[in-house]
Amino acid sequence: MNAQLRRWLIPTWGKEARAIAPGLYHYMRASDGLYTRFHLRVEPDGRGLLLANAAAAARLSPAGVVMAKGLLEEQEEREIVTAVQSRFKGASPDVVQADLQRVAGIIHTLLAPEDNYPIFNLDELNPTVFESQLFAPLEVSIPLAAPDQLVPLLDRLWQIGIPHVTFLAPENPDLAYLVQAVERAEDLGMIAGVRSRVTDLAQGKLLRDVAQAGVDHITVIVASMNEETHDTLLGRGDYSYVLPMLADIQANEVYPMVEIPLVESTLPDLGETLAALQTRGVYTFSFFAIVAPDGLDDEVRAGALPAQAMPQTADWIEETADQLNVRFLWQPPVQRDPRQPLVAQVLQGPRCSGDVAARIEVNGDVIPPRGPHQSAGNVFRDEWQTIWQHDAFTRYRERIAAPTRCPDCPGLALCAADCPREAAGWA
Image (tube, rainbow, N blue to C red):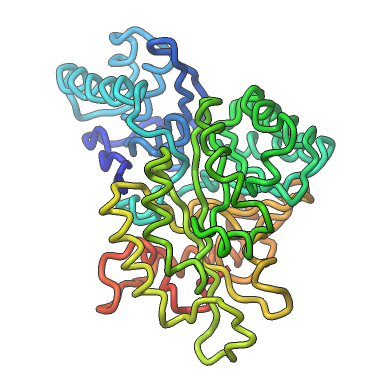
């Protein structure tokens, strides 16, 4: 279940003449009483990504983008064929018609997807996500804030062309703030997710209210299915809510995800934790490691993983996840900060959801997925193109484009973006 991205570039013939304008196109389609939310992200070179319910589905050539857009807008097939032939040269009507049927088949399949999960590991994009001139992240993580701060921020992100947002709920979040944040994202057409401790999500009728507001997925933090280990990291009594909350999430028809912090205390029971949660209907897990440079004093490291242990740890986790037939997502490793307790870093979590994502602070500052916590610009003050070309993002793209494989960790998804032992690639 780790290669859900369709590795098609459809079609591959012809020279581009006039591609679809870059941007984000949003559609809703119904099938058997269920709605699927499509986002067609068109990049500057005319190529695109078709996403269904936030799952990366297909990579499309410029001609494929024209076809997908026409089908999603319910144009007649003959109109689409004519539009493609007027924009691109090199294919007969029969060839265009055949490729159009292939694109239509993809869309039909996505109306009843096997999985409904957000985003994907960088190694699932082949060639790399940046080859097609990606003009913005596919997802952003935003700390929860008051509506007067979040509403203009969400409006700006939608204008930029970002289809997916995850709200980071703090301890004891303002319930009304969270519901209104999800409502605004839904009104815009964005995919909306929430990351939270189960204790905080269990307040009052919060889960029901965010489900009714239109939340698409909820990520709960589960350190371990060992109660003592879990509660030590996430607060006394939090463990008792885990299984009831996961059942309630599914009962409210919201997709459940589990985020697992990787520290020394969570590794011994990790296999049992994954297996137990899989039997409760959880099939998507995200992992973030808190890592310390090799040689750091054990007292300062305080249970964070040593850098040299990362490849072996990742290999075991990926093998275990494959055996259980569950999906795993790697989030950028977090560097151990000796200025705060390890527990605080677990609660804060990763900077963002992965390597095709970014962190956006409430004030509009944009932080790349990896490297120093350095703002590349501000969405309220700066043009997006200026932010995207900032040195912080340029250095990040150069690092993930560089070869990162070595004999120690061949084929690990974690290593696709950066070597997990290198502090320069941590967040």
